[in-house]
Image (cartoon, rainbow, N blue to C red):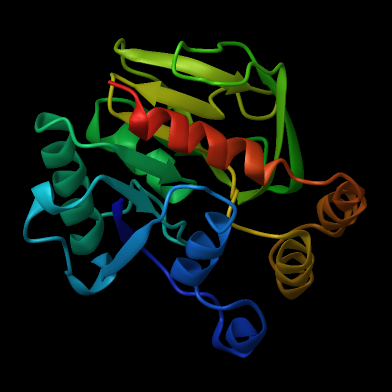
Length: 234
């Protein structure tokens, strides 16, 4: 399979030697899959988008510090590109910022949450097990780092996972888009490092709670299986 990574941000340079950039994290995330995957990366913040949308078996986004509702040219171009993928029924996996971009592209709503920051491990209820899922489950625990959330979904969606903190955590949009508010490409050490780096912008009690949550192992492999099941369906 050939995969296009839509890159919307970079890891901080001071941590890049240790953890890599976001496209590297995504590629590592798929290391355990039986299906060989080949990746091309497009820096969407610099106006790079795949010129041939038919080249790829599926697309996947990175996260971003930006907000999906910001009036930035590259954000607007990204929303337009997602609308193009949706129109032509291309498979797209949205991670964090990409999850929110899908909402902006498909008549949902994204806002800065009154609940504040979500960091560390987010524990979520799986409330739908679509037919494409090879393994049914009742929960998915994934690392998060966000203060924006989807607050409204359009009609042609299936809510897959939720929590009291994040009601729209994982969503299927029509037959070809799947997204999650969390970061299945992260490991716990990167989450820990980023939380400590953001102590000047995130309240101490939220960081302390987030750090304490890292005793729970994230179910990254479970979400990767969802991705592979989903892109092979239909």
